[in-house]
Length: 247
View (cartoon, rainbow, N blue to C red):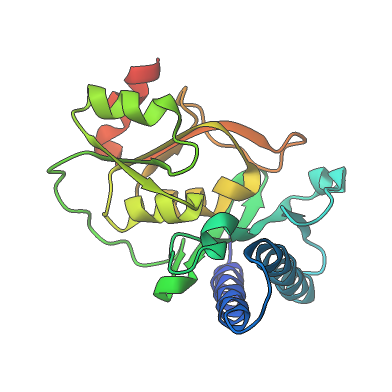
């Protein structure tokens, strides 16, 4: 079970990394650095910061990060921090966009027990120990999907449930839109990796939302193969209807 120290580390490290990314983004405005180079630098610098914070506080925990070579030694650890130092690099590189994030999550025996998703451009970090807010009554079904790789699943669910499509960048930004009540369903097909969804799923589950694979099976982390083919995060009231579309 996650402790208060785990929640604090997740929240504060994600927030600090987000602040670093904002600084890098602002600094790049007065330089000749290209957006692609900025994204690569930002990914690496954020990873280095998160890695140092985690190893300083929990030196015996394993780390799975998008920005480092994977070591299957993590499979022998009950506590694995799964991080995405910059989720939505394309959006980060594009001036004015806010739909990019930092993901920090702790998986214990495959289950995400603590997680934080920082949305730096709006100055907000969502954490899995936040006080749960009551969601409003559903008046329409807003289905969020990728703005660059939407796939057919979102359109199918939107048609079946008489909903409408919304498009955002980062997986974290999309999932937090469900948490904050700005949308009702986030569905993704076409594949992600564990670092794309672990922290968002931790926060979503702690917020009383449904999160699973599209066949309804639970999302299990710290697997030897980090590929996650599909994902559904939604209001619990809509879970059965959404899953029934594909099953």
